[in-house]
Image 1: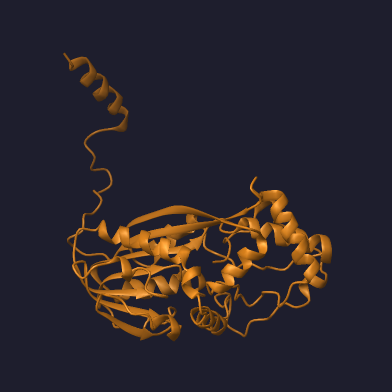
Image 2: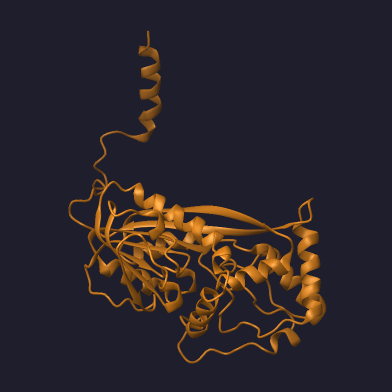
Length: 330
């Protein structure tokens, strides 16, 4: 779960060329939409799922999966066919019942994640979230939790999700965004500037909440809902933050990542982290901003906004109506 889509304002700006820029990886040809190394992300998730105690690192995914499931329960209907895009270890499915979802397709790029069984009847599909292997108008519900922030072409992925939904189908998703892990980002940048004379990106770029509604609208969804949950987790120190992110399968996989950090830079960043953000008990916080989204595929039965200019009352008259109601009270 890597940081935010925008650089922290206090850390924004150009930096002097120096050693920190010498080990950046270059992406293969593919244009501006080729930000992440998807092969590396697959390997990271596969390794994380193979850890002996992998479940103890699932606390964030389990919490966000539960919140996504709660939003599905808020929709008063049964879904005959549903799809979880980037399902991981089925953290949404474990909170849903057969009375809500009759057939659930779980898709992920990591075969190790798909091995987990669920009480609900499920169909496991090994596939890439960037290329959905399903026909149009297949599913009544599509969900996704903490997966879409690693997609290269997010507008294209949202369009594919909209296409595989049936008319009047709904997409309920959650992704990392906003100001996630700003503490880690800023601490690493300040330490590298001090020790190496420049800084390289160590946390991936993510979508801003102000852009998410536009992306959903451009993908063809309507009746949109977008909101933010802030989850703050406390750790003994910065090194534990990095270690847990790796064990979650959430290490940086951007093509422009730096291949290594010098030991003295890491120690300096840990000291800066504790000094700037540390709690009185010695722990440090790591902030995750979770962007929740709900969008519906258009259907003629859905409510539509009234024609422009068809209103019969003016906003200017609302105060008069309220005053008249007050005067009419006994």
